[in-house]
Image (cartoon, rainbow over all chains, first blue to last red):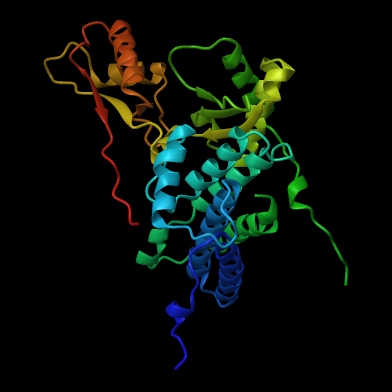
Length: 167
Length: 180
């Protein structure tokens, strides 16, 4: 008997996050083209979240297939963010917090600073642009996103995806 | 079909020069009260700096424009070796910073009929102290990152508005409930 969907899913890890980000991005594009605008933005927010989380754990030395546990996520939020002077917003879905954590960690660690001047600012600004119109709580609401909001979200997520190898 | 290549990393970065100049002046002559609230964090191992400027005047600017203006201000106000250490520059309005939980402390005027000062006088004093009027011009928000800075502001308000000692209340936001 074939395994069910959840049983076929591998553990949360850097590699899976990056691959899943590409899949969910394409899902979002399909939704947007069908007029399901809020659903598209809803998925793209998670794409950004996966990219930022994967990039952070890659930066701190996780191997591509090393499992990222809930404890790892909470340590990032409660310990590492605190060490770097970042006020964490809400729970584990904050794009602004993950982007600041990622950029601050790389900035604070010798040898990990971004080689391109201003790149870190762009990572945070693109994440923030998305966070202005995205929250995991979108699913609880019936509102339809405006076209310009879809365009703005898509521009931000495509920037993050295009730059994912360098994040 | 015409083929056009766009490089998203090289979009023009226009900085608001008037705000950059104003911010540069603030950097040179730091004040105790009022906006902008400028916080600089230095990472000891790399000596890099993260700058955060909370200022209602960012309201009409995009995040990228805010970053550009902050960098321009630092380039004007600081030596190049200091400017070169800035790795991250973030601009937020007071309401945005509140939403992000960066300014949990606030001062409210609890004015009674028997007090020697009026609500309007208190609002004026708060605006002078740097309160935000973006959300509601009639109800200025005076926000702080720490209880100490809120208390220091309360003392300045008392000095600015005699007989208002009992009016000012320092309070703190309750943590927001969020879905995990």
